[in-house]
Image 1 (tube, rainbow over the protein chains, first blue to last red):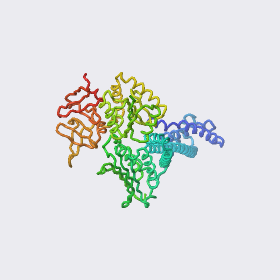
Image 2 (cartoon, rainbow over the protein chains, first blue to last red):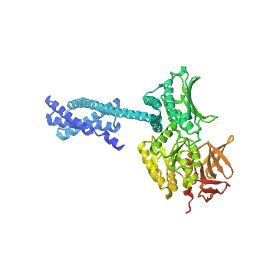
Image 3 (cartoon, rainbow over the protein chains, first blue to last red):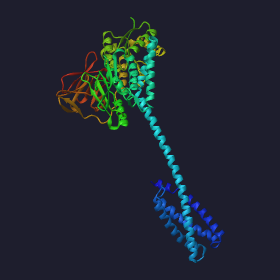
Length: 348
Length: 260
């Protein structure tokens, strides 16, 4: 607070110096046109009036509107008042200094008032313009800073999204399986590598895209499940059901992937006999309904019960894109396992 | 007699790959593979191997639990244990102090050769003893590193569904918790109730000064313990103040009941 106050006065000495130079100029011009009693007297008068006018105006407005450009009307009133008092006080002080006798000549006094007003408003306007430019520059710098912050936030969000979607464990295990597969079944290793390639390409594209079609999304899930399928062997079975009529609908990219990952990681993988993952899209009323169901261990059943980070992540994205119009619910299947149901508004 | 090894790995490709790598690095080693923790435990009990290569993440029993069970059930005949792990798993640091070895997936021939060398030395020096206690100490460290981080306020009441009602059970009334398939059984002096939270999750929320894990599937209220008894085979079990049953204490947690 204190430092802000101080900062509001930081340009005051400079304005004072400019005013003094301006005053000197006025004195010189007046002397040149033969007004008053020589340069020294003119100099003293213009400095006394000019500096007090400046001190009153600039000082008061910095107190009243620290760090801001003052509103036009009140500022004009302040300037007019200040100039009038500066003319009175300044003339008196100058007369005292020059020993010229007070208010010797009424006509000349009025001329001084006119000169004071003209000079005062001129320099006032100059200062105002100068300050506006400075303010704009500060504003522009601040705006640049803000834009950089937003950009950084976006970059961080993308990174977070990518990390949320590509678990290190998944990558390491897939690579370990590829390593194992190459000597025994190079053709199958190639297939796995292609699936991994598809999955990674889609994942990287997804963090840059706003929307993906359901067909792309299901393609991505297929690649993901194929990879897990090679790893888990017969323990994983999966089905993807996407009606042709819904294939072109748009949704935020990789929205389903964390749910499928949960179904595998907490459902099928920790179950000794394995299980099935089914991903299904359907239209109901004005909703697009997406379900990820597994026949795995079920919630609260195993050591792998996660922290709910995947589900929280999906909910966060839903509310970011759809507000309250979308929902995600988890339910236990009667026969074991979990079904995650996503409802999105159709046609958005 | 030929040395024998057990591989516990749920991903078939990785199991086969380790098997063939071992065939190259140690041709006379006889290898048996199991696809999950329970299968591996059964195989080890049938004929205890000299060495066990254990994956960490497995259905049924995970690698750490399996190692603890092997230590409990096989005693001094427990195999030399090598954990096979993905680089991101668990506290790799904890493995560094290992009395036994660990290898990272994918298993690389040069690294495996070093492990095999170490294992050969260990098998040769087997009779010197101290093997089991080293394993147990190491498991204690690994299990501590693996336990979920505690979060928030400790739990004060358990909400257990009984028919249509929900019973509120104060935690201090609980004698012990027992993992029961999909549920956790809450045992009080007066009876039992089931809750849906897994024992592992529950453990992170219970007041640690009162509740301790004593076995893979058991967490006990220390205030409810009457005595700890050691049998002739060195196994410890505890008796409770308000219940008749005895609870087995895993070797990994036996240090909680040492005399002062």
